[in-house]
Image 1 (cartoon, rainbow, N blue to C red):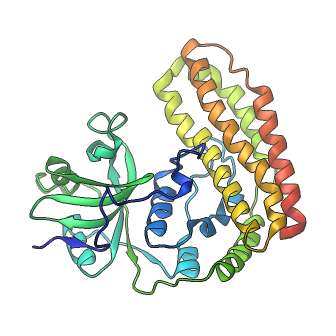
Image 2: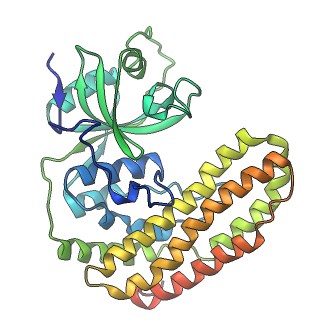
Length: 329
């Protein structure tokens, strides 16, 4: 069958990153699901900065921070992008052939062990779950083009066969990974003013679901109680913990700061006054993740009280700026 490209002309070489994924970002990679939407919307010529109001509700959940994801209904209301769960009732390759040929993309959980863009971390080293967005399928040459993390990549050969389980015998015990169909046939290209007005309404809605108490105060208490166990478990365990906690907190509030700065340029200047507080949280977590690794490796106290107190203070100040602008709940 011929190659199927939902976005003709897109290649790893032609792909251009959004500034959210640029070198100036404290967290060039946020989390796999949020990142693929930033990259995909940017490739479509849409502004992903409008998609980020949901980050204001990010909270410390106890053993992790919120794994933040853009709500599907907001992708539809802002951009006309429709996301629906894919019932994986037959081999994934069959779904990919059908839906990509119809001009749709597939977002699917995948094993990073077979994703060459993770070279140096998971590729051919460890089996970890991540999410990709399939955009270009060439079955004859066993090649797949996909969005992942901060970029657009291709895989082929054995990686292709393993990703789609082409060499695996039928296994009734295998549970298919979660997947979604992404339709772009009703794409809406709003002007910046209309887009920011919609984003403001979403920001108010998500602000009502902000944490009831300071999440960084709770985070600081949990870190103190968990550090002895992390000393015993070692660096591998620490990196898993840090991805679920420090990285999610840092990346989420960096995105919130970027969103508020963008809104300030679109007729909501007061929102921009809160941006530095949330951006400071993003930067501070970058320091924390490195400080934590050194503490676990040396089996010594973290010594991050001042850093965590600063995050708690910045969260309070940022929320205080937003409260009169977005309403109380």
